[in-house]
Length: 212
Image (cartoon, rainbow, N blue to C red):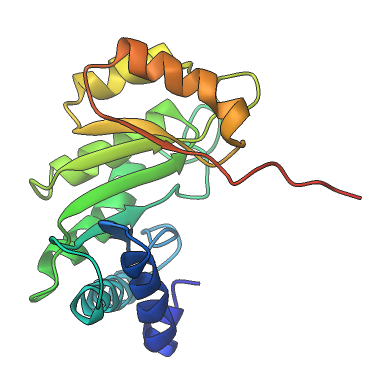
């Protein structure tokens, strides 16, 4: 889907614009899958630059709502597990994320306002992504993890572990997204709110799929 930033920019821009006009203050760039394990450096530069341009253009075209419209650089999981669960070295993960961040901050005239690290289900990979952002820019960082039905990340970290880790890394907001619907994810959100000193993001799926 990231290739549509270049091949169908008008479609991506319109989607962003519809979110703004529905009342959103922030949109996420169409860069969820852009990282150094999936794309070359040249491809990353082009895709990230186009994604930022599309999001900023949508903000300029938005005809409703008062106040500033913000653009968040969207960073999703690498698609491969880090050691010891997978084969990716921690340093390689940091560099894969960093290539996306560097492309964003080099984008002329269309830099992001913040970074959203989302849908990552491993504490170690979350740390790698945060370090990649902090080492390459000073933008605010939101980290949102994807929890399973047992209330833990895929690699075993529970909410208190993630709260402690991410507050220690001095990110700006933390939370959870995807994986489950509102009712299933609510207890985890409540645990975050009860124990974190940071703002909490709560973005569950619309509901669980019903297979017939």
